[in-house]
Image (cartoon, rainbow, N blue to C red; front, side, top):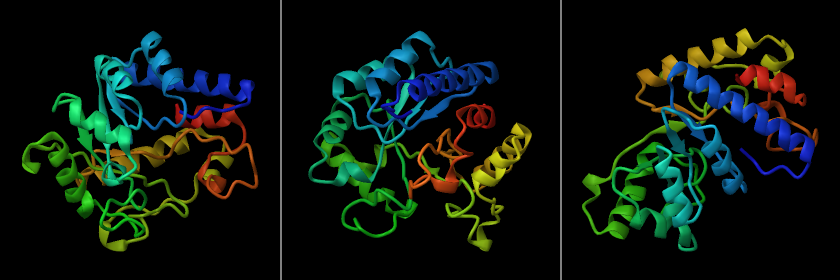
Length: 239
């Protein structure tokens, strides 16, 4: 969930977000939220449209006060490599204060690599360094830190496991190609296929495909990773 300046797009994003919450409630499933620059807005939505099975706030970077609000709503807070960065004041403070059963470790591989490997591609084997840092902050043994493994496997150029034949994970085409079909069943098939294969490898969650809407054709980050530029199409594909 991202803070979009365009009010029309922002309202459409809210509509899609709420639809996803309702779908998760219907299926009795938790949700994973990647929120950027919109934590307060996200929190208010969750207060009025509660996720009954809770979920995870991926890569949490908000305040301690807001962290408690998300925890009250049944969410776990995810902490990764950024917790080891010297300038990550908020994550360090939050993870040192919240209850031990209210957070999980995660990786955003190949990004957010922890110190001492910062600047290199991230890998789940580096979670040890995140756990060690959090253990120091909390004054406990690292063996008491919970483990949560996520991956961003969405097909196309972001096929971290699909590009490695040894993993047995199906290499999916770009989400744009799926969106071009305008058939939500195709998106469902992709999600179901990846979900089963990643689960067998021990991953707890796949953070993609996501509800990105490519409103800027020159955006080098989103590009073909989005289902398309039409929020209506993206919404149907995600739901």
